[in-house]
Image (cartoon, rainbow, N blue to C red; front, side, top):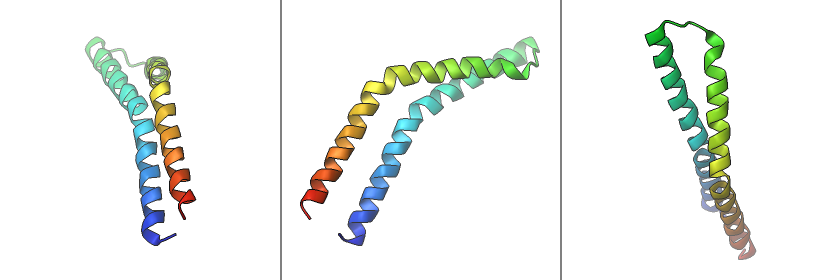
Length: 87
């Protein structure tokens, strides 16, 4: 194993991790922005109002994106095992 190989595996692992977390973070950010705009327009200053919509949005996004996430992770794992088998 060369240094470039290890760095490439680590780079791809970080890239896959960011791709897996991205949709949930984006959904939480969008819902948080919408709730913040709603709070600003209605002058409701309840701090706990943002948690439930964000949790629901992240959970729904997770349910929708799970097949894609599983496919991406399994293909990455197969790629790693294939490359390691060639050494």
